[in-house]
Length: 78
Image (tube, rainbow, N blue to C red; front, side, top):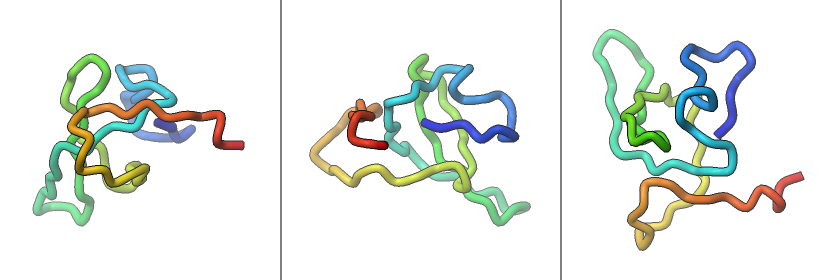
């Protein structure tokens, strides 16, 4: 999880998401009045969030893992 300096409020890292964790996309919502899609994620507090597609990045595709959160090894990144 990474926050943009001028990102929309509330800021995810101050509202139930954690650095070092990847979150499974639970679904997608595309309102007709916008070209943006919103991915549905569950925070560490088990709250449902709609996150704009502009702020979602792919970490892995793993059909065998059924959890909604994936711990990341941040020591691999520089």
